[in-house]
Image (tube, rainbow, N blue to C red; front, top):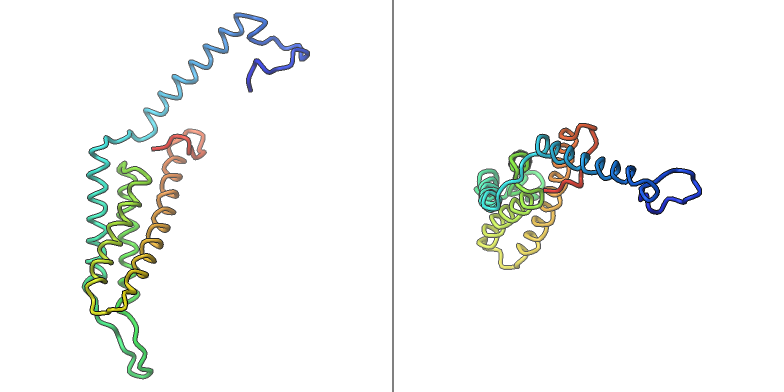
Amino acid sequence: MDDRNMPSDTGLIGPQQDPSAARCVSDCRALLMIRGAELEETVMPAKRAPIFQALSAVLVAALSAAVWLAWMGWDTEYQVDPVTGSQSGPYEAWQVAGCAISLLVLLVVALVTGVRKVLAPTALTIGFTAAWTIQAAQQPDQTGLFVIGATLIFVGVGLASAVVSVITYALGNRRATPSGEPNFSAGQ
């Protein structure tokens, strides 16, 4: 509340009426700013240098592409059900689950180690989508539908990683503040 806008008929003495009250308000504000800065320095993680952020983004993108190759990049064979003759694949459920868990771990580790909350999911999404798109573009399918698949991968991984980033950031700030409330104003 701004002390200057307080009605004069309240009977309260404000900084305009008493110079010592003005000094007290000023001293209190300065003390709160100092204590807040001390608290932020001791509780909040240090901001990392731009070179760390750039190298970390490249590493996250490369590792997310490696996750794609390790879990699903090698499997290009479709499965045919002998009874119904229906075709599925090329990926099995265990491959998709393993890939998703690996990406989740990669993203959370990147965020916890100080990669910015926007940079980490962006790098992860770009690296994973690029790896998928490069392999899909090399398939003999001439329909060009891989572009739609790449768009869906980009949107899906991007949204999922953004949600994980927000949750990880909120949980990290909740644990870091003494009141137990998330502090979204202290952006990275």
